[in-house]
Length: 65
Image 1 (cartoon, one colour):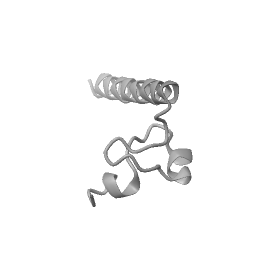
Image 2: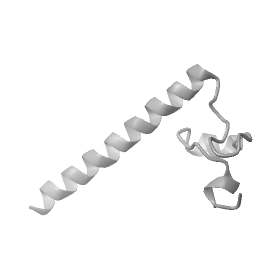
Image 3: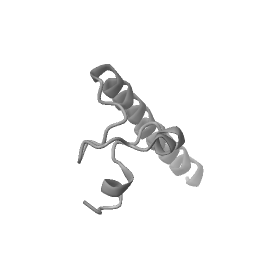
Image 4: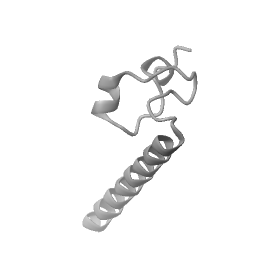
């Protein structure tokens, strides 16, 4: 039972990751990749290198805006 639950959780994580990648590719096509969806500022290059699927700058992700 635990193995099945772990497999389902892993599949959910993979599904979320695929959705994030698809959304990043869409933002690239639209010329919006690298810009925060909340404030419109550029997302730091290091943040994007760490995770290219991020959609918010550090400030907005931290709730500081």
